[in-house]
Length: 329
Image 1 (spheres, one colour):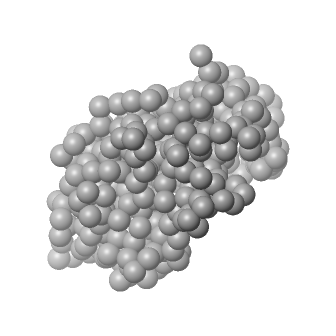
Image 2: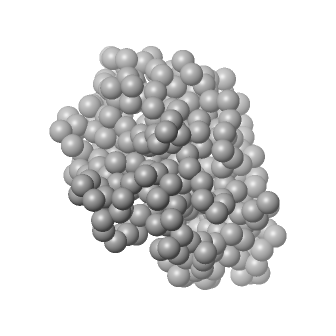
Image 3: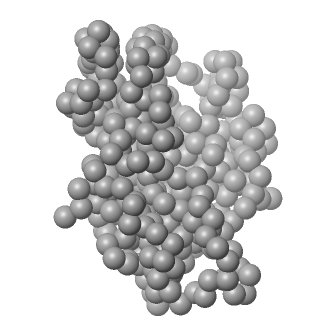
C-alpha cells in the first residue's frame, strides 16, 4: 500500500512517463512541458499530428480508483449536457490508465484567457453554467467522492499540525486555542440543514478559462457539499462589491437552479475550513521534496504569526452578519 503521507514523485522520470503514454496509443512528437501542479504531476505534450494534450499523474493513494472514475464520470455527464468542462479522453473505453503504480489520465490541451472576476457580464455567464452544473450534481449525487465536512477540513488538519513540530512552542497555545474556537463556530454553522450535491469543489477564478465563454477545468477536488461552495470563491473585494457580484452571479444561476438563500450564512464557515485545510495540506505533503522547495516559508515563525492574525480576522468574520441579497430577491 502506498504511504501517501510520505510519497513523492522521485520515480516519475521522463522514460516512465513516455512508457505510460505509449499505453494510450498516442505517438509523442515533442518534449514534455511540466505544468504548475503540486498535488499531482501534470505535463503538456504534442503528438505526431501536432495536437496538444495534457497528462495528469494522480498522486498514488490520495483517491481510490472508484473516486477518480466518479470524477471522470461527472465531467463526462457535464460535457454531454453541453456544459464547457475539460473532460478526460477515453482510450478503448477507459479514461483512467495506470503504469507502474501511477494512475493517470489524458485531456485535450485547452487554452484561454483569464476569467475576469470583476467583469459582471462574465460573472453572470459563469453563474448560468454553475446553475446547470448543480442541476446535474443534484440529480446524480456522488457515491464515492468525499464530503465537505468538519472532520476532513478541520479536525484532521488540527491533529496533523499538533503531532508535528510546525509551530514554535511560544505560538502553539494561542494558535490551537483560536483554531478550537473557530472549529466550534464552524461546526455549529454547518448544522444548517441544506441540500448536499455533487460539486466542482474548487471553483476559484483560476479554474475557469475564457474562450468565447467560460470553460471549467480541474475537477480533481470535486466532492459533495452545499451549492454555495462553488460560488463563494468567485466573490472578491469590499463587502459592497461582493454584494453586487453575488446578485449578478445568482441572477444567472437561478435561471437554471434554485438557490437556497440560507446558504449565504455558510460563506465564512467554508472560508475558515479552506484556510485550515490548506495549512494541513502543506504539513501532510512536506515529505514531498517539491513542497519545501516551493513553500519555504511554511515552517517559519513569521508564517505562523500571520496565521494567528488570520484566525483572529476569520473569527471576527464568523461573528459578523452574513452577506445578504439586495432588496428585490
